[in-house]
Length: 202
Image 1: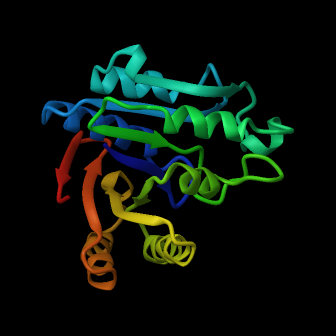
Image 2: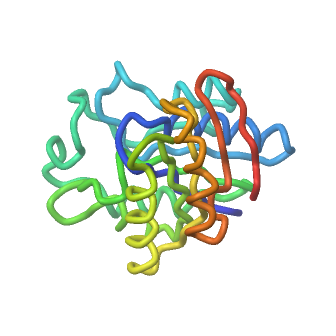
């Protein structure tokens, strides 16, 4: 089973939408897919598992959120002690799938509580990190910083997913080729909220 962690260079840049597209694509390719959201804040107004389930037509058993909080804030603010060990045990006990897609809350360094951050969960569950990037001015710097952090902390880097929904000028279209040149062709996916497509190079 391949285990992928969906993170991003910022908040509100298309991680959930991409997760839905990826789950749908993998299922259409004949794979058995499980999607997990370890922590969902802003719940129930925000329910990423529901969005992914509707996009990918996964069952409720195959698409779920583990822990929720109503306030739309970082987990650190609402969890005095995030149930880290329980979460790791739940994720590591999942079997019987070809793909496990785990979507994080925010970026890789978002704190879960005073002791743990998202990357601790990635490490404890031996997940590969796929970084969603909004294709806009500044994205190269944010992308390279994420890649550098992952590699310097011995975390598995699976590549980038570029979101063309954020294209604002003709120059932004050079970002994908520039990122590939700087990172040995690690931009594996290109997608757009408007066009609902996904190009796979994986």
